[in-house]
Amino acid sequence: MNTVQDTAPVDRQNLIAFFASLCLFLSAVEYVIPKPLPFMRLGLANMPILLGLYIFNRKELSLLVLFKVLGQGFITGTLFSYIFLFSAAGSFASAFAMLILHRAGKKHIGPVGISLAGALANTAAQILLSHFMLFGDAVRYIAPVLLISGFVTGLCLGFITGAFASRSKWFALLPKNAYAELL
Image (cartoon, rainbow, N blue to C red; front, side):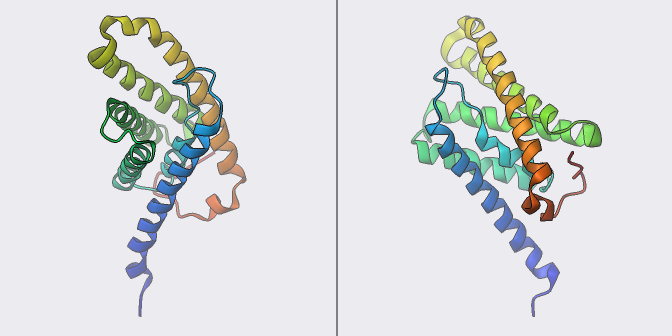
């Protein structure tokens, strides 16, 4: 007979897999949304990562980000390209920044602030890679546009995630981790 202790790891694994599939689904949705600039995306695929901060521990969240990055690379056909490297660097920088801010801010910083930190960390990582891999010093011409678009998309994603989290009965039922204060 299975006990709660026996089934808990499987449930966590299933939850990580479900959140990873949400990342990929939202990524696909995002590709059909018209973009004002070719590189500007809202970052909808990061919503499950942002929600995951309240549910998963560090290792589980890192695994979720890894699944997101690998899945997007595989689906978009960029797995072995510099685009994949940019996506991975931005995603992990974003997740790290959001995790640090979430854990440090606890009740004082909500989804909007955490999302902004993640968006700006993502953008900073991609600007840094652009400097070393593609554009050199010329990256300074595009950096302001990237930072502004990152700020706007981070703000939007934070509001969307906060609204979802506060209204979702499904999200309210999920087990939260020790740092799980949301809204």
